[in-house]
Length: 465
Image (cartoon, rainbow, N blue to C red):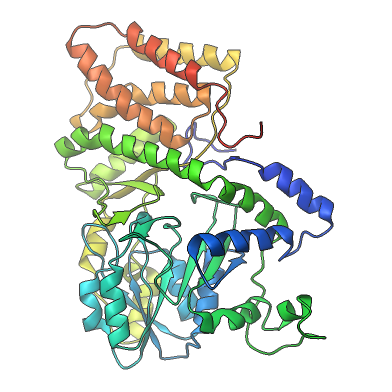
C-alpha cells in the first residue's frame, strides 16, 4: 500500500485481463508459450511487421538475448547512451563487452548521432539507440553509420512501443529490438518484455537462446522427435498467465493510446505558460516523430529547484521521481571506464540529470464511480483548502497552489490516474489565477469541477459490456 495519495503509477485494468487469466488457469497450462503467449506473439508480429516476436520475462532479458545472438566476446565494444537504464549496459557487459557511452542530444535526450563516428574503433560491434520517452532517435543517420562500418543496430525500445520515426514504427529499424511490459509502461503484465527479430537470420537461433539453448520449440511443433542442448541460452519465457494479462492490454491499444495522447497534450498545453515563466523545459518532439505518450518530463533550471518541487509535491502526498544517474557517472560505470581505458565525458547527460523530473507516468487507469464517503471527503478537502488562508507562494509553485488538494480530490472521486490528477492541477491553477484576478468566487469553480467529475463516473476504459 503506497503512502502517497497520488503514486507514481498504478496497475490498470483496461479490458479482459481477469477473464483471460482465469481462462489460462482453467486451461491447465500456466507455464511459458501457452495459448496466450502465442496470441501475443501473433498480434505483435502483425503490428510490428517483424520476422518474429518472442515474449520474455522482462526487457532486460530481451537485451541479454540480443547480446547472445550477436556472439559478443570479451573486448568487443557496444556504443550506447550514458543516459539510460542500467539494463542497456548490463546486457552486453555480462558477455564481456565494453559499453562505450555516448552523450545525448540536448533536445530529445536521445543518443547524439553526431558523436558516433568518433566513438567507433576496430572493436566496435553494435550501436544500441534508446528511444527516450518514446521519441525516436535519428535512425536514418544511425543506420547510415552502422552500414558504413558493418555494425549491428539493436533498438532499446522500452519506452517507444507504437511510436514512429518518419512514419515507421520504432523497433522496426534494427536487426533486433526490445520491448518492456513493466508495470510503469503503457502496456503491462507487471514484469514482462519481448525480443523483436527484424532480421530473419536471427529468428531460429532466438528461439533456441530463449529455450535454455535447446531446440525445444521445434520439438513442440513436431518438427523433430526429441530436443537437446544445441547452443548457449537461458530460460526467458514468461508465464502464460502474464501473457493473458498482457494480451488483454494489447487488444485495447488504440483506445489506451488515444487517451494517453490526449492526456499528454493537455499536460503540455496547460503547463506551457508556467514553464516559460519559470525556465522549466518541457519535452521536445521533432515534427518527424510521433511519440506514444509514455513519459511527460520536466527539466528544471537547477538541482535545488527540482528538489524543492519534489518536496512541494511530496508534502501534498504526490510522488514525483527523477530519472537516471548517467551510467558513466555511476559507481560501477566510472570504475569500468577507468579499468577499460579511461573515464568518458558526457556533459549533456550530466547536465540534464541534475534538473530532470518525471512527475508521473501517463497511466491508462480506468475511471469508476465515486462513493458517498469519497464525495464527502472531497467536499471537506475543498472547503478546508479554499477557506484556510495561506502565505503567498513562491513563483515557481504558483501553478500548483491550491490545485494539489483539488487534484487529489478529483483522483478520489473519479479514480483518475496520477497524471490525470496532476494535469488537473495545472488546469485548475491556471483557471484559479484568472478567476481570482477577475474577482469571481471560488464556489463556481468547485461546482464546475464537481460537474466534470459527475460526467466522468461510470466510464471504464475497455471494460466488458
